[in-house]
Length: 377
Image (cartoon, rainbow, N blue to C red; front, side):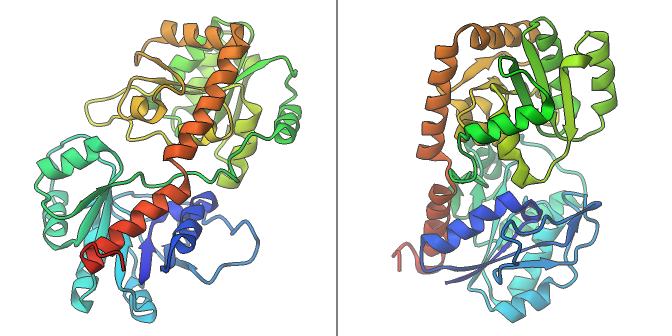
């Protein structure tokens, strides 16, 4: 079976672990295709330093615009690779999904799309028409969560549907590493006894980073590490100064994906305090499973998919509640045994549910069902 896997997410090198897992999981020849750059950032180099023949960069237009980008040369790629199936790792209302579906229809190729959208929204033109076209022509769909699957059905998708997260984690890349912990805390100049709380993601209002700062300001033992970029960064710096937290705040900006495990290891806890808005709610929270795989206790808000991801392997607080978040962090500071227990439970949960290997196995099983009617051949 030959598969072309098209995804802008693969500009991050760590996400390419999924492609390696797909290739290792069975007799599937997967070639990953992704943009040469996303917005102003070039695609990250391959960690081994030698480009793999199954990773292809290609020019893209309107990069940085999630649902409007497209690939001017993707038809040539399809003709060169002769796949049996094309997996478009994009929402059904994205322009690129419709572009690839149209090209594949001409070539008689089945297409699978992916969906994270967990709010049933009425789409404006032209996205409503794009989604209708994709629903009518796709061979199958993968939803990243139960709520995303429900939205697909509610909005009219009637084809084959699998429930599989978009990406898992590599337990080799994301693992507890005392040496990395010491090195990265030394780079920050943090005392070994300080309790470092991490956040990784976009610095936008809905991620609740301001709540994290408010919670941490009330606990003198805490320092905060922010990994990520976004429009809220200047305001967060001002908030930290107002709260007297600026000497305990370390904001490193957006880092290469391959550096994230080291900084997660430096943390004593990872917090994702997302807050839903009328047009958005947390779709998964991948950084939670990355931290859990590194043996870092996690605290999340009861927002969107966060409770389903954490399960019993972390602490949950009401969204928008800085006092409850502060109390959860104080529990971890005061009870090292609780922190160790949650760290162990988190890594076990990832091993059982969220490894790249498990996700690859489920994905390949879905491919085979679509191509062979479930006979597994």
